[in-house]
Structure formats: structure tokens, C-alpha cells
Length: 102
Image 1 (cartoon, rainbow, N blue to C red):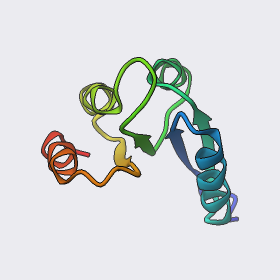
Image 2: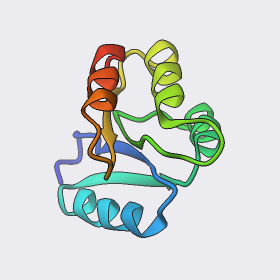
Image 3: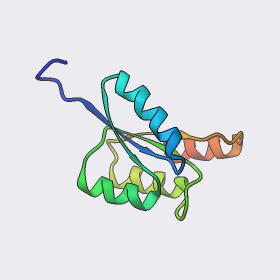
Image 4: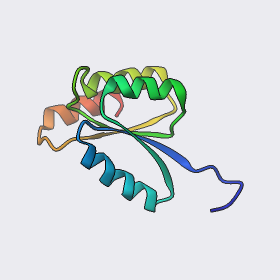
């Protein structure tokens, strides 16, 4: 890696740790630094401690929903890119995520 180039940091928010680990391995092969959290609450705490370039966020999380977390991140961290990750086949949910900026 070029010494002058900063590694892109990705926050993965998914309550299924195995999915998070798979995404982490894929991102690692793409030379991305990856942090995994299992809930929106953990994500909010992590965002206060570190900055990220991208958040991959599951829609279904324990406690606060992924959609609510995405809305928060869009308003609090407008420069962060967000990709919604979900195994659910729900076109309305996809449309809603796109409308809020994910």
C-alpha cells in the first residue's frame, strides 16, 4: 500500500456476526479497514470514537432499526456513504432506504 494513501474505513452494522465476518474478509481483500458492530447502539458509540468512509447497515437490528440508524448517520455524518444490507426481499423497504439517502 502507498504510504501516503489512507486506508478507507468501513463500519459494518449487522446483528449476524457471521455475515459481518464475511463482509470484513471481503473488504480486507479490497484493502479496506473494517469494524463490525452488532447493533445500532454499538454503531452510534463507534461513530463517536472513530470516523468512517462507508457504513454497511442491515435493516433489521435489535433495538433501534437500521432505517433509523441510517437516518441518524445521514444527518450527523453527511460525508459518509451508506449502503443498506438486507436479506429481505422487500421493494418498499428498498425504496424507503433510497428516499432517505442510503
